[in-house]
Image 1: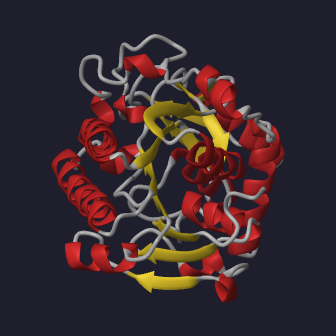
Image 2: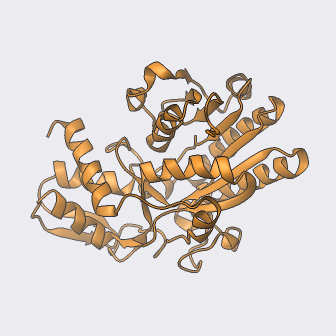
Amino acid sequence: MNFWFGKKVLVTGGAGLIGSHVVEELVKKGSIVTVADNLKRGNVKNLRQVINDIEFSKVDLTDKNACNKVCDKKDVVFHLASDAYGLSYSYTHHSEILTHNILLNTNILNACHIKEVKRVLAVSSSCVYSDDANIPTKESEGFNGEPEKANIGYGWSKRILEIQANRLHLDYGMEIAIVRPANVYGPRDPITGEGTHVIPSMIHKVLCGKGPITVWGSGNQSRNFIYVKDMAAAMVLVTEKYPISKAVNVGSTKATSMKELIQLITQITETKREIVFDTTKPEGAKHKSVDISLLKEVVGFKLKTALEEGLFETIKFYKDELCL
């Protein structure tokens, strides 16, 4: 039996990197999908493969009335929308990111309650974990100490989101799934502009730059990268099978250092230029890697895309987009 067939599903942030792939997954499963996005970082062209099969609304989710409207008569809400940026922006805009995310999260969750949405996915983040968390990090460490310093505003907003979701589950019986994604990458992530994430930023430097390739930090800092299609599939699975308001890590099975990452990108693109590590720039937490044992246990999830394969597809996408 297909749980998703015929379900009326809202995806906030559905024109973004992860959201657009979630939308495609749901359309394939026969859901009736509405996308709500302010297009600040998302783009309607990300939905071009399914645009005739969905309803799209440009919505400011900091407006509670707009949230009530888009949540009306929905069976499921995937709440992916957030003010999320790369390290270069997050490092100096903690207050802005904290305030904006708390506001839009509160509006959407309250709208889901008011409109009696039965099931919700609340998307948290691995940024909730502290800089000195154990590696790989289990879900039980989500509220230990302070969130990682480089993304402390974002991390606190996601901890608060989890608390709000948990109270709605406990107080009103709302079926809520919570995921904590690791570093997601893949086609459709903005490659230029303020707050670009690390992989598109590196790819842009390699494809479009000249001279030495500069990488922020020592290069020894490591992250847990997961390809966007794997992330989208995991989110749909967790929402279907584990809506008990208990956070689930979603990531890959290994951490990759920035040195390894830039070497893979230059190998795939056959680029032979000097690589310089700028230790005067912030590099965030030294190591970030999540334990995905719970994800495997509760939904039987298996990663399909190795980092090398995902980078190849991502680089191909950017080459096509940039006409290189």
